[in-house]
Image 1 (cartoon, rainbow, N blue to C red):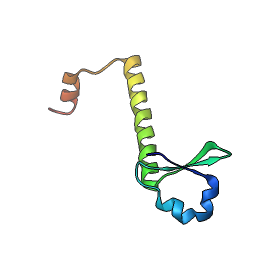
Image 2 (cartoon, one colour):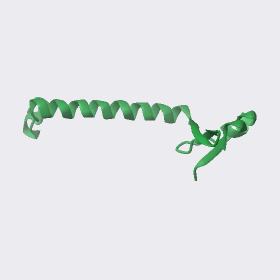
Image 3 (spheres, helix red, strand yellow):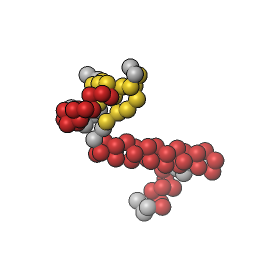
Length: 81
């Protein structure tokens, strides 16, 4: 269940922080509109790592499209399989 609170609830920030769980951020609204999300640092680190991985995969796919794909046999021979 999505946990949405007005930013004014941060007056009792300890209570709000106690509601933050992994894969369950607390969303804060300002003037009735979504404005902020509070997440655990571990989850932020995972999100950053995922973004970096996806960027590297996209770069590799672009390189393969531009320069050609390597066959599975070529990969195996490169690594001595």
